[in-house]
Image (cartoon, rainbow over all chains, first blue to last red; front, top):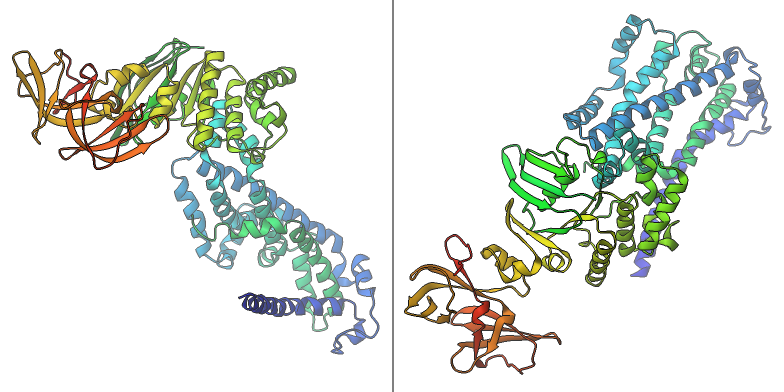
Amino acid sequence: MSLRKIFNEARLMLLGIVIFIWTLIPIYHLFVMSITPRVETFAGALWPSRPTLENYETVVKQGHYYLEHFWQQLWNSAFVAVMVCAITLAIASTATFAISRLRVRGGRLVSNMALATYLIPPAFLAIPMYKVMGVYGLLNTQWSLILTMVTFASPYAIWVLKQYADKLPYELDEAARIDGASPLQIFRLIYLPLMAPSLVAIGTYALLLAWNEYLYAFLLLSADKDITLAVALGHFLTTDDAPFNVLMATGAVYALPPAAIYYVFRRYMVSGLTAGAVKS
Amino acid sequence: MASVSVEAVRKRYGALEVVHGIDIVIPDGEFVVLVGPSGCGKSTLLRMIAGLEEISGGIIRIGERVVNEVPSKDRDIAMVFQNYALYPHMTVRENMGFSLKLRGAGTSVIVEQVRRAAEILSLSSLLDRYPKQLSGGQRQRVAMGRAIVRNPQVFLFDEPLSNLDAKLRVQMRTEIKALHQKLKTTSIYVTHDQIEAMTMADRIVVMHDGIVEQVGTPLDLYDRPANLFVAGFIGSPAINLLRGTLRRDGGRNWVATDAGIDLPLGGNAGGKDGQAVVYGFRPEHLALGNDGGLPVRVDVVEPTGASTFVYADLSGAQICGVFTERHGFHSGETMHLMPQLDRVHLFDAGTGHRLVG
C-alpha cells in the first residue's frame, strides 16, 4: 500500500519536473541571450563564453535607438496597469456588493451577461474600440488604453468576485444592519475586509492583464513617449537586424514586476482563480 | 425597554401568503417565545419585527411607534442569530463595540459598555480573541454580548441555541433566562424546541401554518391546550390521543373507541352525546389501576433513572405512560392503567378545538 503511494507520488513528481523544465526553457533562453555579447548572439551555446551585463547597462542608460524612452515607457506600463487595477476593483467590488449583498433586482442577469461578454474575443473588438475612442477624442491618450482594459477586465472580475461574495453569510449583513450600519458602512467595514483575499487576486489579475497587453496598446497609442513597454518591445522587430540581446535584456526587466507581484500574492491567486471555475 | 405589538400582520411572497394576520401584544419586559414546527412562520414574524423582512399587511409597533417603514438600524433592537453572525475579521471586543461605534459613541463609553457586558457574560478574558478562536458556546455568548452592549428596547433571538450540543444548550438556556431576569428587557425568542419554550418563556405563542394556535403561559398551554395541535406539540413524551365517540347516559360520561374500549370521563366533560371526539391524557397522568382501569399490554420499558417511560398497546393504539415510582414493568405483561379523570382533555374530532364542560 505504502509502496504504491510512493510510486504515485514519484509519478506526479516526475510529471511536475517535466512541466517545470518545459516552462523554464524559454525563460532560460531569454536570460542567456540577455547576458550574451552581441557577437555571440546566435552561437547556440547553452552558456555564453563571456557572460556580460552590458545589455542591461544599455537598457538602464537608455543607450539604444529603440530604448530612448525606456524609463518613460516603463512608467507608462506601470501607470496603465495600476489605474486598470484600481478602476476594475472599484467597479467589481461595488457591482458585486450590489448584486450579491444588496440583492438589487436584475443583479443575476447582469452578472450572467458579464460572463457572456467573454464569448467575444477582445481582438474582434479592436476596430470598434478604436472607433469609439476616436469619437470621444481619446486616441493617443493613455486613458483610451486604461478604459479599454477596464472594459475587458471588469466582467471577469465581477463574475469571480460574485462567487466569493455569495459565500459570505448573509446574516453578517443583517447583523450589521441591526447594529446600525448603513449600506455604505456595511460595504466599507464588513464587505471589503472580508473580501480582501479575493480582491487581491482580482486586482492582480487586472494589473497583469493591463501590463501584458500588446494589441490594444499598439492600436490606441502611437507617440513614442506615450506607448507602453510592451509596444516598445514590439518596435525592436521592425528592422531586419534586431538587437536581440538588448531586446531580451529589456524583456527580462519587463518580466520582473509581474513575477514579483505573482510571487507576493501567489497564495491569493491560487484560491482566487479557481473560484468561479464551478458555478455554485 | 418597550412593549411590542403586532396587529393583523401578514407576509406574502408573491401570491403565497405565509403569515396570515397575526395579533400579539407583548408587554414591556416580558419574555415571549414563538414556537412551532419549521415553516410555521415564526422566524418570518421575528424578522418582520426586526425589519429584515418587509411587512405585507398589518401594523408592528415598538413602544408607541409604528415601525413598519422604519429601517432595522433605527428600531433600537438587537438580534441574536442562529449561526451567531459574528464579524470574523473583528475581535470579540470589536464585535461587541461595533454598534456603539456606528452610533458615534466615544471611546470611553464603548470601553465601559463592552467591559460591563463582558463581565455579565464572563467574556472578559476573551475580548482580544477572534471568533474563529472561540468554542460554539463562547461564540453564542459573544453574540449575546453584542446584543446587550447597547441596551436596546427589545431583544430578538432567532433559534440561538440550535447549533449547540445538548448539554451546552441546557446551560445557555438557563443563562439567557437569568440574563433576562437581570436586565428585564422585552425579549422575543424563536425556537422549534418546545422544551426551550416551556422552560424560558413568560408566555408562549404557538404558531402553525402562519397562524397563532394559542397564546399563554407555559403551564396554561400544558394544562389547557386550546386545540389538538397545541396539545400534541407541547409536552414530551407527547400527549396520548385516542379517537372515539362521546357517550352520555344519565350521570355517566365516557368515550367509546372504535376498538370497543370505554374511556372514563369526569362529570364536567363538555360535548354532546354521539359527538366524534379525541380523548387526550398526558403520559404522567396515568395511574396504576386495579381491574377497573384500561387493559394494556406493555411493549417497551425505558427507564431514565428519574422516571420510567412505558409504551403500551391499548387495543391497537399505542399509548405512553411516565411513572416516577419504580414499578418494575416488564415488556409483554398485561396491566391496568387509569387516566386521572380531572386531567383528561377532550377535543372535537372535526375542528380539533377543546371541548369545555
